[in-house]
Length: 393
Image 1 (tube, rainbow, N blue to C red):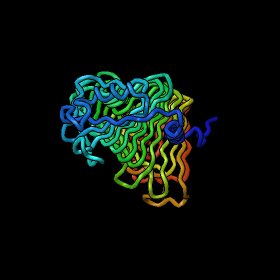
Image 2 (image 1 turned 45 degrees about the vertical axis):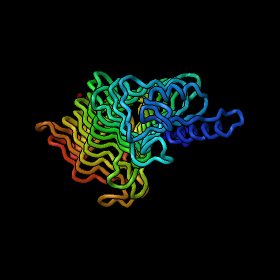
Image 3 (image 1 turned 90 degrees about the horizontal axis):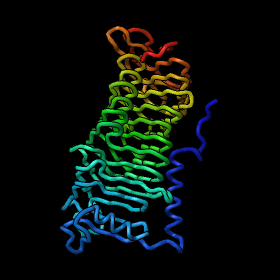
Image 4 (image 1 turned 180 degrees about the horizontal axis):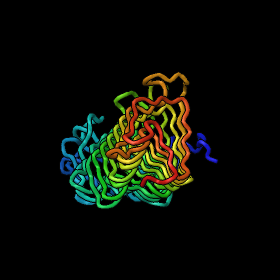
């Protein structure tokens, strides 16, 4: 039997515990004093370093929770990977120059290496924060490779572009890591020839899309936005226009998210602030593809709008014993908020599309309560839902 994760199991709880741990360590009498480094202007004072990699190396030599300030006037270009290994560091962009006391705007970091940042280390969990940055990987490669025991917070930043031959177009992460997108951060426009156009997560990682952040317009074979292999993914709801998972595409399955091998997907909204999957597309499971008998997808005040599948499951495709549960905070289901909804999702395959909103096969389980279905379509059968004994794939 599947059970909803408790507060202690909740991905946001992991993040908050990491933040609390950071605060405790910082206030400890044994904590080492943090240092501040400033990048820009060829390293001339008051700048301390000419390039970002050198500043990160200097921070690594100081055991404290260091900060690196990066100027807008002299934005860095990463010709080689910046290695962040077993260290706590915060990289903050948006400073007009090295004399500026506070940031304004964002600093562009051009990525010419693959990856731009390699964050790893297995001594203890390390905290790495990226704030006020525009990380442009459109020249190729990915922005982030995250391994071992790392807590990575991306705040008020954009990760754009990037294409890899393999998995994880913008972010590749493996192990007991947390990636927290917050403060209207965006991960967009990346691609992978394999799986996970935006993010590829495996082996127990946690991905949180929070505070009006989004994973948008990424593409891959499976999991155009996010590919989760034994990972936890949580997306929170914010006002319209701040959709969390949108406009991603997969040439095979799971346009928005592909979840397998014991992953847990949570779409958590509030009344009037739904968690939204919008405009995603795939062969099976336009928004969400869920497979394997230990994989669980949960939605609360969630909207599935304008997603499409070529063969089946315009909104969601379930198979292999996977479970999907959707409900709302109210039973008053009218068009639009406050109910969970499937609106204008479709499956169209030249007359053989099935399950405009939901398709369930080979032992999948769909439990749907307090949910509105409106204007979903399939050009063969199952305008709202289709249940089959054989996998459409």
